[in-house]
Image 1: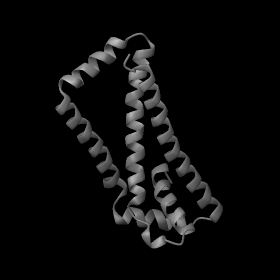
Image 2: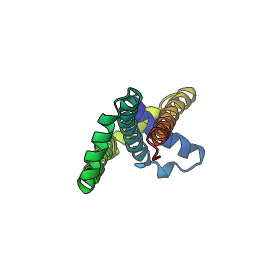
Image 3: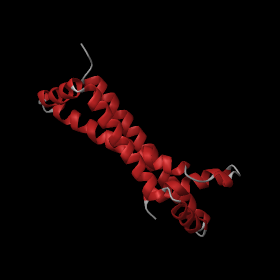
Image 4: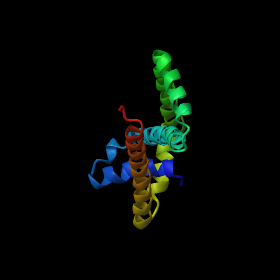
Length: 146
């Protein structure tokens, strides 16, 4: 089972603990989309940090000035790209058959295995968020307006 299907299982696992298994559904696919968006934004932020730390700030500032010059188009492109990533997660993992087959496989496992899968999925999701926040904080620190 891959880490993205494990996120679907994590949602079910948490709802089962709360005795709300009927609510299991596409909420876990939202987690997949959010994790993918955090990962992509972390990579983009790492790109900016790399150039800033290697004294090639002009590359970063040129990119930012081009985005600033085309403010509306830049924002629209970013929103469209992030929406495509989010919709891609729904297309791959959001259909009812995929969710049901993943949950059937998850339910058939031993409780220890289920807990391990849920912990790994939670670790992936949390790590995606934390890395995104760390990279965002570094960018704010490095590019603060003086």
